[in-house]
Amino acid sequence: MGNDSTSPPDPWSRERASVQQPVAVALALCALLGVGSAGRSLASDGPVALGTGTVPVSRGPSRADVVRFLEQATMGPTDALIDHVAAVGFERYLEEQLTAAASSYPDLPAMPGNQKVGCPAGSPTTCARDNYTMYPLQVRFFQNALKEEDQLRQRVALALHEILVVSGVSIRQPSAMGPYLNLLHGNAFGNYRTLLADLTLSPAMGDYLDMVNNPAAAPPENIPPNENYARELLQLFSVGVDMLNEDGSPQLDGEGRPVPAYEQETIEELARAFTGWTYATLPGAGSRKSNPPNYKAPLWLYRDAQGRDTTHDKGSKTLLHYPGAPHSVLPANQDGAVDLDQALDNVFFHPSVGPFVGRQLIQHLVTSNPSPAYVARVARVFADDGRGVRGNLASVVRAILLDPEARGSEKSDPAYGRLREPVLFVANLCRALGATSDGILAAQGTAMGQTLFNPASVFSYFSPDNEIQERVLGPEFGIQSSTTTIGRINFVSTLVFNGIGRGAPTGGTSLDLSKWSPLAADPAALVSAVSRLLLHGTMTGEAAREVTAAVAAVPATNALARVKTAISLVASSSAYQVAR
Image (tube, rainbow, N blue to C red; front, top):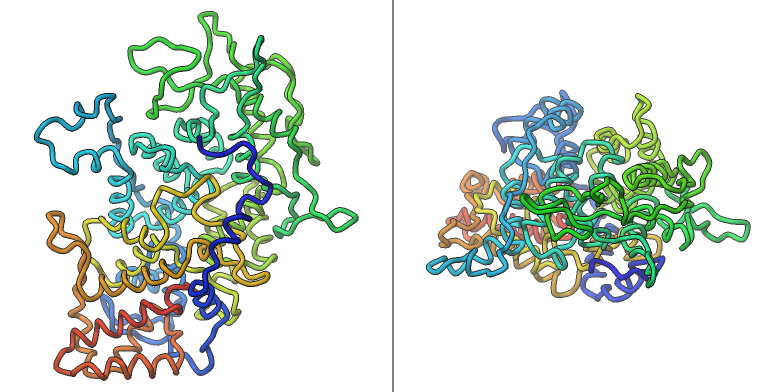
């Protein structure tokens, strides 16, 4: 079962209280509050020799802002992408990404009832892992992240997975999880209303949150339908728990208390609107009221031989009431498919959906603490993309990335930025350093607190409202601890100095840092180049002197060791781990 139907109004309160371990808090405050920021940063603009050639950034966006943009819009900047975006500009790059061929996840077979059939005698010892765990999907994630061209789609799909959660903790087979992940990729630039419909009929989601095989109450037991999906659709996937202003702030009553967006009765009524759906009938089988699992096709509304949806609740349902709300009351005796469609319209047009979803997308892509004005600008685009269309995700993502609060060479607000979540930390650094990889990198994220596709619950890997200081949010710090902080440094050290999994039959992950060696004779120039690549030139003078001294302490005869020292020190720093 994906979620307890009695989940509290503040779903992350328990987690928030338990994760603030001392080292993690120190790292968070140093990074977000700008400890050590006194002194001039290294220059971030001007021609840069690294990459495919000198980039005359004065003709377009600054090189620093190009790096920042790619940290937000991709799985990580590369030399080639920095050069390309500097040449074509942000808007042209976004247009290219919106039409780029979509990457995907493999279509894997379901695990046989007798697993020995799936892994016959003589199979590799890794057969079960490679076919019947999250492993092949995790490998494909990193292969796509490091090699495929649809970088923006991948980045948005990851954010959607972290908002619209299905977890491998419960949905344990990749054959079930893969179609859900492909659904997110396919809808990343589509309409949010379409995404909600596809999500509602996703067999993985139906299984995870108990909507599938969820009939109407019937005598003699009259057991009410399960409320899990209805609750989380409202609470986590669309409206939130409070009525929101356009800027994402809660609406308050006369006594200064947040106005609830709905009551428990609304959840119960919405659950009734979603009754009667089962898995699609397997090929060659007959349809039943409760079909066995089938994750290859959307859920079906059960109908008897006369075409009647007999497991759907036929009573009238009272849903969300708000100004201009469509379908606040669903009439009795409607077809189950009509009820579902009208119920989703009722949810989708709620005025809180734009600020609720928009704020979280900003947090995943740009900064953990967007200003109310930034949220409002994005919410307005969600409400109307300029062509009268509500919920156009392509327009919303574009608005997020091109907003003045996202752009600029350097940000001075101490609360600006976001901790790179582990899987993005891995992908970003591998891409920046031009890693050659087999994609077997999920264990690195796990060591840093994030097991890919296995969030602990429907409340995701971390809370969007996790505070690291009063009124300073740091969602990703919700999975940070003393142990995972050390895990981050260990990952950098292993990747830079030794490579990961080298010697494995699949090749592992390794770096060729030889192109940096010509800079090693001048430690200051080397450190400046690393700062431009990893920190878009924002390393403070004090930090640059410390790192330069450490590099200079390495014998000049060992140029590669100097390069590795410079990169590892910068990549291990809070200045890199918090993308600003």
